[in-house]
Length: 89
Image (cartoon, rainbow, N blue to C red; front, side, top):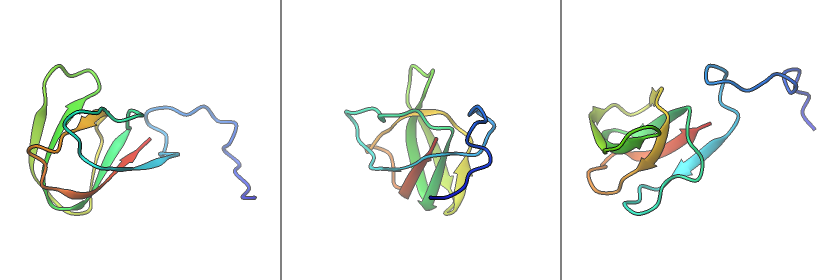
């Protein structure tokens, strides 16, 4: 078992991610867990709904390897061309 000297520290929005979730864009289903950030492995557009948003937003031309500090509720398939998307929570 790995020793974690920070195991008793409270997780906050500014603390490093403790979980990574592979994301498959889906027009119908929200993410099961809100993110702290999104990693984009393959460049393209990212159509998403922020955790407190009422409408979808498209981020255009997101570069491969980008980490976006956004709390996301959903990544939509329609309008998303970016690939290898990972939610960090």
